[in-house]
Length: 457
Image 1 (tube, rainbow, N blue to C red):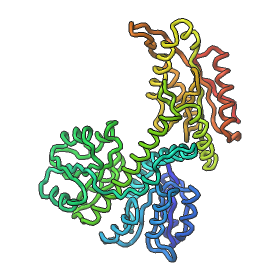
Image 2: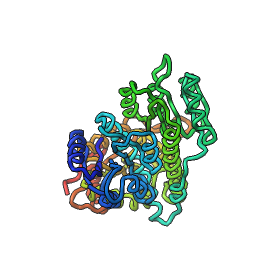
Image 3: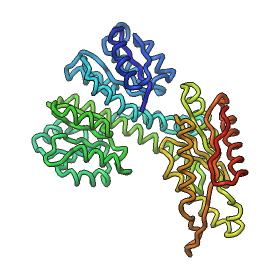
């Protein structure tokens, strides 16, 4: 996974060293030597994560962070404060300014890379949600984005997983009066509570006896109902390796013992605000989409949504020089299904078809119904070679098993023809769709049940 990292530091040697280290890990890097430059770069959307020095002339890092987090256009960009200041009070100032993390110099390079990768994953999810929200706003629909930005991160329900009473008591004391905290000593019971309970945050001690706490974190991340639940780990200094591993498997944040109360409160608040912000985006997007831009039969986005959102995706890909591919799918001989078995049977095939495709494409892909038996899958950050593999997986998933079309157990085979195109010199939406459509016609004219790629633009 790569990302574009903005490094902000007025000390040029520091800037060059950090840039070289990140580029060695295949990150794209842009740089700024003062706060105003950093704000301009972020406003243009030219970075995914900001590594921000605190001590700078003019506008210091804390003020830059505050401005980024107060601007709706840059609120979602993760910010890591980097400084020689190493006292808990300094970390709290950074976190209260809106920073996602606070790293002290000299930097632990492995910790830095792990944190950057973790935040890059988060940014992808946030960017997709925001993109859809902005699309809805362009359609004149209310999304609740302003309300989501005003979230204070208070009054959360938290599950603390810790089998040491003295350790748990310190966390309870620190958060008393601010949040509702439940304590669970048994990691397996904690997993079930995480699935069933309406929690805003899990705090997991890495000092659990006779159980690997990272196993619990991994299980929570793998289950649909707890996948979006933020995880904060509490660790000893000697747990450094496990902390880095935790970030790699999806832990959102960590705190080292001895616990500083104010830092714990600030880190918890950061996680709660982000979760509620993302939940609000999801809820508003879902509610709004269901009203006007969802196909009622399949539950997929419809042509109206595709045309608006695809324009945005193509423009973003063109601006950032990133690949984007699109496939058009057409169910073979679908008219014969309707003519032979009736339109109810045709509807069952369409619903079953949509369900199969959902299972084999990626979360970042946009899947829409154009109308009739035609569908579209848009694949951001995907070149033609990768898109071809995804399209073949889709074709095989459709052909693999018959489709049920009645309560009596009647079933029929169904296949699909696919036309595939990658964004080229025709950076517009219409050109991309036109080339994919031509490839689809070649697929149908040359035997159906196959994937055909468009000529390069």
